[in-house]
Length: 193
Image (cartoon, rainbow, N blue to C red):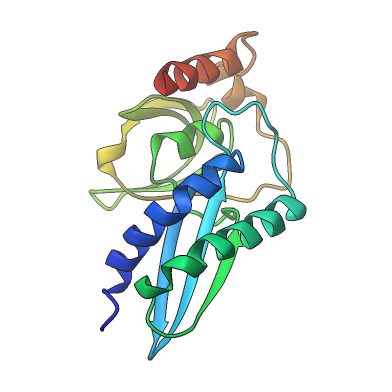
């Protein structure tokens, strides 16, 4: 019996692993399968669910989930022909922003955004809903507030910064409002209902 292609296999494995990841208080961000002959590498990327009040998870959490996920995969070895390795990890800073919750989690972070027309914009992430995100684009004198629809984004990724965000940008995005964080939490909680 031949294994399905990597994308089909990833979808099947997502279904198998979803309950154990959810039981661990996390959610699946991605399941990736790479094959080399009869060997497979399964990468399970997990993150906190949107709306979670937790501030993060540590290596012990990842190790426990890795053992539980491996035990869950054992009875389903018929899905993976040949041997495999399982890697359980959290998303790194290099994870592309592909879903609305990725944008919401990175409120006030700097991102490099490539738009469908080829324009590339470096901007600070503001409030995000299910269809678009507000960003502050640095300007010579003042930052400019823009709204970008996700459908117009071909690639976006958070940038590493070594200094605090400019106050003009964070103020433009509403970070100085007492309810700034509550807005994103409210929309996340409403989405989860």
